Length: 72
Image (cartoon, rainbow, N blue to C red; front, side):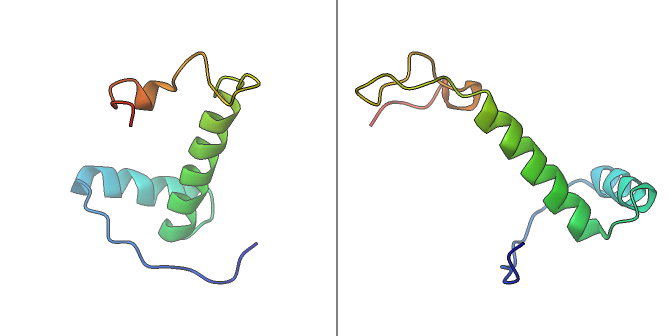
């Protein structure tokens, strides 16, 4: 696990923070550790669901998060 960390300011609704705090307590994690865990799990899940690239590096399908992003 990497030892260095960067600070990130994230604005969320108070109700979401309360839910994250409750979840972190039930998982015996700090709020920061819980958020990092959820982000890592979400990203890992998205990466596993990405379509395979063909020989030219082209994907047949775009991930849902990128469907409305114009090609550059």
